[in-house]
Every structure is written in C-alpha cells, then in structure tokens.
Length: 427
Image 1 (cartoon, one colour):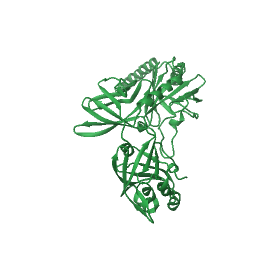
Image 2 (cartoon, one colour):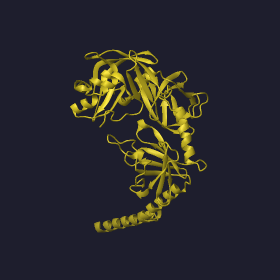
Image 3 (spheres, one colour):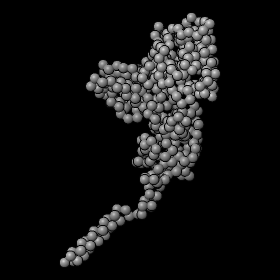
Image 4 (tube, helix red, strand yellow):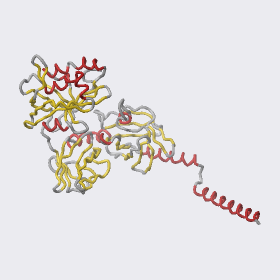
C-alpha cells in the first residue's frame, strides 16, 4: 500500500513539475542570454535615437548640488560630452561607452572623458563629486532614462534634449540664469515666515520649524533655463518646495515653481556678515605690510613641524566657533577670533586664545603667526591686540574677493578669496 501511495505521489509531483516548466516556457519564450541581449539592444536604440543627445541631471555629493552634463551616444559606442562647468560652451570631449549586464543593464563610461570625469574622478582626500562611471539602468522611456549609481547608489535621470536648441545655446542660458539667480544669501518668504536662505555650491539652506524645534534643511538644486530645480520636493514650514522660476516676476524676486505664494528674493548681506558667515581663503601672495611679514614665516614654521599647509581660511569650525582655520598635512584645526561689527564695512578682530582640533599644538609650534596677521602688532616683540579692519569687495552682491585694510595703517592689507587658495606657502 505504501508503495502505491509513493508511486502516486511521485506521479503527481512529476506532473506538477512538467506543468510549471510549461508555464515558465510560456512566460520566457527566449533563453536568458537572448533576453538580456534584446534588452541591451533596445536600450541602445533609445540612447542613440536622441539626435541632440541627452541631459544628465547630475547629482552626486549632496552639498555640491546638481549640474547639467550633456551626452550624445552613437551606434559605434562613442559618447560625446559637454557640461556647464566648462568656460567655453562649445567645448566637448568624446570617449567610449558600453552597455553590459550585471544583475540588470549597466551603462559604463569606460574610457577617460576630460569633461565627464570631472564629476566622477575622486580627489586625494575624498570621493570628489561622487559621480559614477557605471550606472544601473532602472527604467527606460522614450524621453527619459532613469539611472542609479552602481557605487554610491545615487538616483539620477537623463532627459532627451530639445532638437531645436543647440548645446551651446542651452549652456549659455544656464549660465545666464545662474549669474542672476545664484546668490550666497536670499530672503525666503512664505506668508509670515520670512527668513534668510543661505546658498552655496548649488544648494539652498533654509530653517524648518517643527514642534518647536529648528533644523537646517540643505536642498541641492540644478539650474535649468527656466530656473532652479531642487533634487526632490522639500517641505519647509508646511510648504512643498520643488524649485523657483526664472525670469523674476519683479526685480530679483522669484516664485516657487508650483506654489506662486512662496518667493525667493535676492538679498545683499553686509560685508561684515559675509566675512563671518562664509568661508574665505587667505591669499598670502596678495597680502601686504605686517600680515605679509607674518605669513612669510610660515614656510619656516612648516619645516619645523614637518608638515605642509594645504589651505588657510576664515570661517567657522564644526561647533560654530569663528576663527582662522587651516589644513596642515591631514589635520584641520582652528585658532579662534572674537569679532565685532563696527559698521557694514568695518570689523574688529581679537585673538580669543581658544582653539579647536589641534589648534593649541600648532599655535605653540609657530602657527601663532596666522593669528598675528589678523590681530597682532610688533613693537620690539609680537603682541596680540584688537585690530579694526575696513572691508571692500570686488562685487558687493556676489563677492569673490574681499580686501581687509588696517584702519590705523593702510599699508597692512589681507586679501581673502571665495575659492580655495591651495598650498598658499608652497608644497
């Protein structure tokens, strides 16, 4: 009897397996290799069908915002790239791409491209802009290709370019919008909620209030010809923000893409606040007088500690304390300064005698000359004093260079730049 049951059970199981196999064969009427090949071929047809190429709306590292990368793919696996980061809107670079399979379709930029790899190449200390050389293809439509970085898993999208607009014209429009809309500071207005928005590297930071708590929200954005588009929708004090439209409805005021009751307005921050609220890099080659004397000591000081200074700046440390920051070899430290705004264009500095990081160690080993440059004097010996500086800018609305001039001796000058001055004392 047991044998009869066993034979019956085996027969039922065999019929079930045969039935399942037939169902599987019905669903997948091609071998897996052929299905994958067909999927890659279809993806390639869409990629190469865009006569004017695609705009990769690139987002990588969140605090660096988003940028336009224009890409055109041909049937011979060549890809031509352009981007808004090049000064010449006509500049392009061509390299090789590949479509492969690895748990799904993969788009690879597998040879060096001087334009594209500015976004994907790491730098010595970190992952750079966290761009990718390999993207997983998540979804393909006729007008959009949705990708996710294989390494960092950042979702991005490629959008088919308008065939009627040249790449040069598109990038020119992007540059024009950026020149007008992008500011270090703006006024954000949502009904009675008016606050300053802080801009930096294609990001806008606003304060969100919830249940009595305040938190800063960093919102990366990309500039398009029609305005500023956020990476995703952000809710700030009950309002959903997707971006702000260009051109301005009135001089310097921009409305939210969907909610026209919300606006962003350009705001010129007094220079005394610009110098304490942003990061400014010291350029020793442009300094004069006593500050120059102090900074000239640093090559000797670096030899003494057997380190190299990568940059020196004015700014705030991670705890919000203002001072002179520097990167010495792989260490970051601060010598803190007290400050007092005398007017919109004049400020007083005094050495606070406090530090962060290994600031005290460096101070005791000669880096005190950095503090003397801003708040010191020399009369037979070095002394710290409270020193007043007048501030001028190359462009008050969007400064790239600030010049500090000693109120009591105009021969003493410090020059600060918005962009990094690397290895200011040599390497």
